[in-house]
Image (tube, rainbow, N blue to C red; front, side):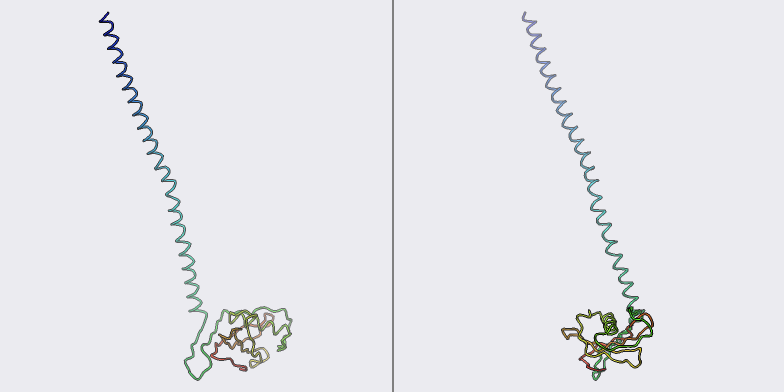
Length: 198
């Protein structure tokens, strides 16, 4: 009886050890399996996430660079090829600078030919002359004080003296009538002081 009891006791110990080892192995399998899955999952998340900042970084600079290059080229072309600006250094002259821009176009007209220049403030011609002056100076016609608009040396030429409403800028603007196309600026002079007449 004692030998049977000893055998059973020994068998139970062996079973306990085996069960413990199986539990440990199972726990290790779970642990390493989890680590392996987690390690594989992390690069996936990183690879999914990393292209987004890269895309943002690679997309933004070209968008910033292209307009600046285009703007630079356009500005260089305008300053070198189109706008002729002369600064007047003569202290006795009322003119600060003179601007001529060959790209200025006629502003269009609702008038029919033959055109007769009208210096009446209520006329369509007056309004269109103001539009041409505004176009040349870059000042809205509603922000202009008109000191004078009159004959510029021929029936199809006019000259105007204007200021910004706050009187910080003063201009003499030369315009000409283009058949069926309206008034077109030909020259702008920025003045030191207001000239009531040319």
